[in-house]
Length: 221
Image (cartoon, rainbow, N blue to C red; front, side, top):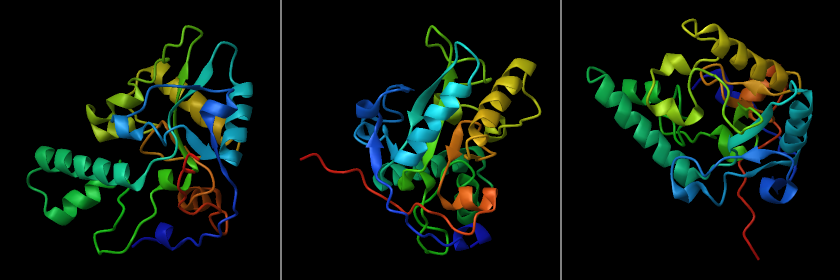
């Protein structure tokens, strides 16, 4: 277990908000599979408020579009198993443990290889996957769209991948700079993934502890 998983968490009690009720930001269809629909537009209030400030700082004509916010542990488990399957098919020479570890580069597991529990960032309500769209609602050039992450080499997903065309490189950095200016931490292996308040954020930003623990979407009355 690396030092990231040793970062303490002191839950601050901040509530989740539903983007469908709050408004102010765009969002796309439920990602990955229909079962994500109940959760993906929820996030911590502090995350939502910071995203509004990010959007206000963007060049004229550009808007944030949420791909995914909160993710259930059931979907997280499914995503990790799917990523392990892809890794095993692409790298048949790897051992089971190596497959597990390589899969963690793009999908956070629920349980580490040694059997200890993990806290995936999206389960805290502090992580968001985002794109920028133009006035017609089209995703600007990032070299790929978020939904294509399963179809490209993992290194192509890196925020500062050296093989990007200039326009895609500039757009990834534009998003990164706007998000980090509002306190978010970018996961460097995924240009679209940002978090606030979780363990990764605490480690990247030099905070003494995380402020968001795992949380579940409020059940409908």
